[in-house]
Length: 264
Image (tube, rainbow, N blue to C red):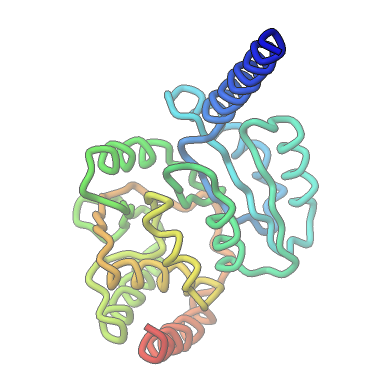
């Protein structure tokens, strides 16, 4: 009987050691940062952009995952994204939604992120310098979200004048109808996942206005947000005509103002 108790005890120790080893392994493989990038009809630049991003991130010390969220593409974007996921399974993930919807794609990517920090980037930007500066601020403590703003005085906005003007109009509308205190909602963003997870779940809008709702809710919820300057330039012609976008943006901001008043 005594011998049997020792054997059972040894078995329990072995089970514990195996469990501890598995936990350490999972912890080592868990990404520290999750980069969420909605992609739509991006076959022309997708593969090279992701490879460039991987190359830049591999030079940092962070464990990371790149989450591409394809949404309703009519070209080969989804196939290319899945190919990159198969090629780099430890670094790239591919999610998909059935319709073109930037906000819905971003929300799904955020809620599926595993990192301590979530970063929202664009496939034609891939600004790892922003990642580094944002991470330094977040790791110092006291700040839960960092926004890269094109509208700060120290920023370099090299886009055409019409695009710069449109950003200022959006800023004005957000301040007028929502009391937004910052300068930018559509810029690059980095935040502590656990701090904003419940806020993201509360968001009810989609398309471009989703990011505005997320940041306005975060601001109203007491999340400490810091804006930093960035350099931005268009690497391709904008897909959305501004003359068509302005009425849509105005309508969606008014819709968001009503939603936040009724369901704060």
